[in-house]
Length: 346
Image (tube, rainbow, N blue to C red; front, side, top):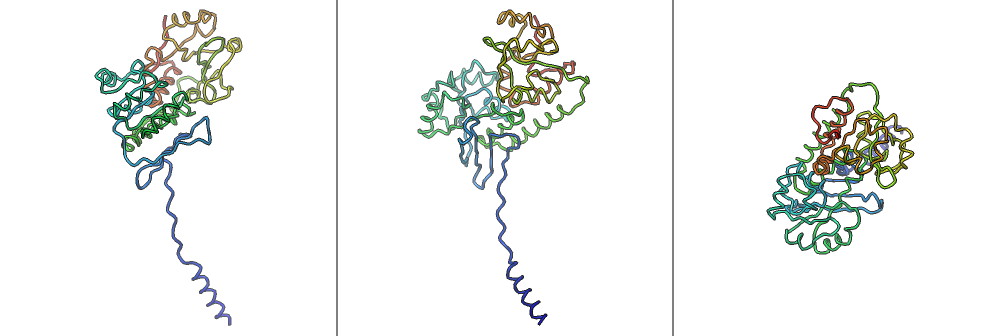
């Protein structure tokens, strides 16, 4: 009897242990840092998902099966990302040549090979059509939405780019993968981004030459307020990664923070470094706001990128390792080669 029960158990076990079909593995998102961009490989191409930071329920999603040869970029940052992966030749339109840095693209605009749209807010649909534009990448600020709807209605692929809303410098740079997908050069974009990450982490972890954490302030007077990067912005993250003690460490937000001028002056005597005042010289600062001469940190070291603003806005997002290198050199007081920054003189 005992043998019979054992036989029945073996039969039941055998029937219940038939090999189950394995579920196919879900493709992974290729983006590791970005909170707003998702790229998922498929058998036929890629699925791209872009989250609107202002509208959590609003998501732009499309499937890309082939690359684009004619791309309109509505921000200098987008131009810089295409250049970073060697795909600037696919540009067919730019927002305004006055804000470009790349000499080759400026020449292409002058020759008429790349259209100058003059403004992101007032898009020339005629120019875009004349350039045989296949895809348009825009920043999603808001005013251009009506025109974007019109362009989509005539079959143009319009893609929002919210890299400027990311809170980590490497998350901003990771949007280069989007341009890798759009141009069919994802492998190249991934290699580029991997190198940027390695450089960034190397600089972030290298030994510092001074033991203190310099107390720094960033920003400038606008109207009757002080405007600066908020504590959770990508700029504040850069400051933290070179061990600066940031004046607005307790401010809320991921964009800009606004403070009264008296509150800024409260602890200003302890500031040893002023970053990004928005002017290329001390004389220009005083011309903009004469009372700067009474600010204690006006007498300290001041650094900004405004001697070549176009270069910074075009390239800094794709090269956070360069920005970090600049800040690290400034922190250590041994400046050898700065990519974007320059100390303000008279």
